[in-house]
Length: 374
Figure 1 (cartoon, rainbow, N blue to C red):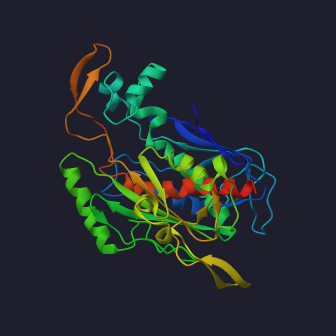
Figure 2: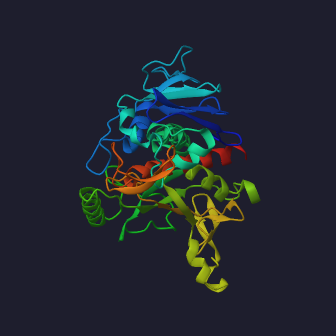
Figure 3: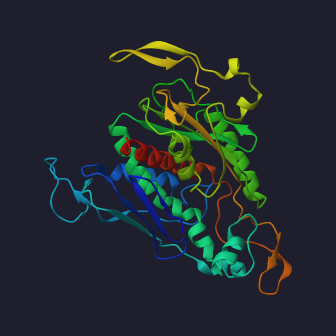
């Protein structure tokens, strides 16, 4: 399976939704990266299930256990040469970093009906053709594995922030309800509440009502997420296959609900003239003197695959959770007969709120890899 990403920073994700654990192995991580365990835990808690009314009822602590590649940092700030214990701050050793999360609230029995009956909009049928089985909860195709993605991304976010690069995302829309947009000209990312990540609280309350309505009807709803990266140095990246867009797309599409992505003005450019789309270059006053900027940011901070020095802005389209309580048509793969399926188990009526940190994590992994290849 293609469970690895990265040129210099190689991230490998393993495990299954209802297996004993999920985890991540990171090779190429430099020596000396600091990891604040409490900051990482807070980040993982934003994605963790069972924390509110708009997520799945499955409850998992999602506490990361570091198995290798780190050592604790003493009160004096010096790294101690011993196995990582409960220290608040860890430091990478330069060796492969391995970290796991134990699955504690598994219920594979919920998926007995779908062992031979593929769930619509899931990977069940093509997985059956390729591997000869349908695993409980989707196995490696489950969104549960985004917890491991968030471990790697959470570590990268801390390192990027230490370099002056900040990444934030918010719920851009749920159904037809839209949040205020991020300012594509902002020099710093805004503070957004982790509890329900929107800019406009009124829009957030309306979104919660939409989620409650579809949940009560046994249905689900999709939406979109907007993400911004501030502080990216101009010139970073590579053309063609090494472009920043290419790398972000590859990591972002590791989040199972993502069905589309656009940068800057995105698909709106198809209806523009060049005079409308082009961002004029200007001279602005920077912290250490004059700097080149653009007057607008329809290009979304990337030109020719390279960072322009403007904020990188992209949006992702998130599909509705495919596991719904309503009856759906499917087929019995052993009898080769059409049948009706009612999916059981615990599922999010809307995956978008919990996917916000996943998009931040995916972007952080891609950007960290870009900078390590410079």
